[in-house]
Image (cartoon, rainbow, N blue to C red):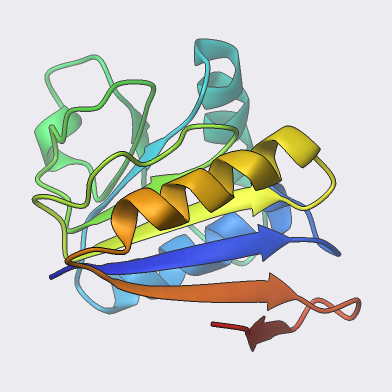
Length: 148
């Protein structure tokens, strides 16, 4: 059974939240794969993770070369798991279909996008059988509150 965490972004954007969650993932000794909806967004996220904070280094790479299997965090548009990640993040309208092969899924979606909210509801229904689901919503001050 996988843990599936739904993160409903409200106050702070993905670019502020994702790097912190990736750092926590690496601190636990897990590798991560981040699935995004487009190549352009993957490239933008890659650039952002290199510079998101001056006092931080978040080792990662873009999928598509011979170093993929060595990356602690790999950004991809595909459904594969080339770095053997235990945790898979879904961002920018990438929607999880199954938790098979992972210890944890993290599904992040914008509360300001009605289509993304609808997709999250469908994903919740599709993933609830056989997985441990939790739903976290962002408060106006950026704190996370467990809602389900």
